[in-house]
Length: 117
Image (cartoon, rainbow, N blue to C red; front, side, top):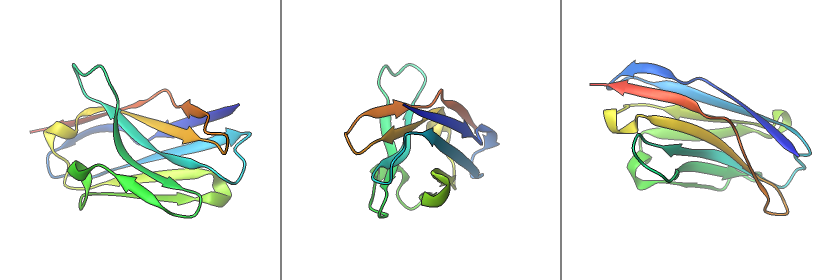
């Protein structure tokens, strides 16, 4: 099992910045992918924000490219999401996701990000 602890959400004005942090513990192994998904109000599904694997390969949504930066510290099993130039449409619950070498996925409890106009 893998446990995830998220932090860094909050309320910010449009144009502002926030940094999300997610730390994994348990049977993480060294081959994995970590990242962020979000679920906006009224949406039933979570959408990809950005993820990064253990060798630094990333994928991200077009809507956040140029504004959000994902990074990770493998030694500490931690992934960061630096969110800049935030927009009201970025308002959502942001969930950390961990995928292990066997492609099992684990989710954090979520952290609320609210961007006011």
